[in-house]
Length: 298
Ligand SMILES: NC(=O)C1=CN([C@@H]2O[C@H](COP(=O)(O)OP(=O)(O)OC[C@H]3O[C@@H](n4cnc5c(N)ncnc54)[C@H](O)[C@@H]3O)[C@@H](O)[C@H]2O)C=CC1
Ligand SMILES: O=C([O-])CC(=O)C(=O)O
Image (tube, rainbow, N blue to C red; front, side, top):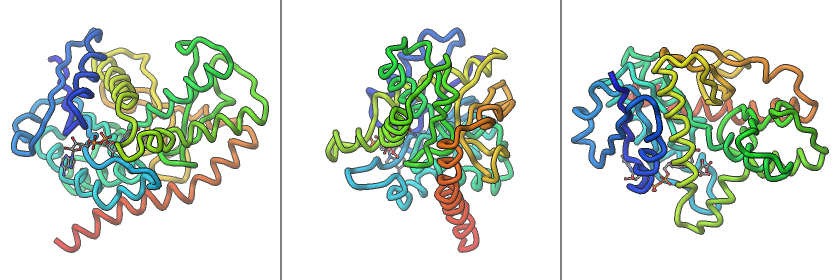
């Protein structure tokens, strides 16, 4: 059966077309379905294998991703309920911010519905990897296609941790370069928000990143045994219940978390990892509490 890809309330039609166009060379035939109203949702979700959720409000200058929580938490919750009811076995790709909280929200909703499969819920952090690869390639005059920087942690500010020491091919950086690249990668989303001056956040680069992650998922669903991506998933690599790392994908979802990237960190990376944990922990707890409180109130 051909995997179906549903894009729930994708931000604009250009991006739906962007995702579809970027997927057109896939070996696996795929179809991108766009929804504009929840009435279509239930019937359109039946039989879908990959659901991409980018619904919700974007940032304006001066806002953090967490400032979107109050609006986007409810949006994400209702869409994940629809997924749980109609295609509980689908891979879910969560784009809506704050990803650090919306993924835990989705997990709680799926648990309440009795259909949570942690291997199939993904926070999309691909754009962080795309940015890290791009900035490193530019800085070191490398071909972009050759560069691969694992980005771990989460998807907001200091929780975005590019592991430059693990860049492939092996590259050496000065301390100044590491500091400059790390901050640039962490702030790249904010840079776009400021440049767009109230007109939203990254859209075309996000469509590209989403298409890459969807294509990787389709390859994995198709039985390709060599698919690796960074993603924010349920994890036991650290003491946090959700953590972004490289993962190996299979047709069952996350087949393995790649722990080797977290071994032999530089002092800079280890400090940054320690520093991001309290913020990421709080964002996870905020998402979990949001769903649990609503359940108690209901
Ligand atoms: N994970 C990542 O790397 C990235 C995440 N984002 C996030 O993606 C989300 C969307 O951003 P944009 O596409 O730029 O925003 P946008 O404003 O262009 O599009 C938002 C879409 O959400 C839909 N929507 C709004 N309220 C809804 C509701 N109640 N139910 C269902 N759909 C609803 C709108 O109809 C619209 O199609 C934001 O939360 C943004 O922060 C954006 C870029 C990168
Ligand atoms: O920065 C934002 O608000 C959107 C986003 O997550 C990104 O571009 O990485």
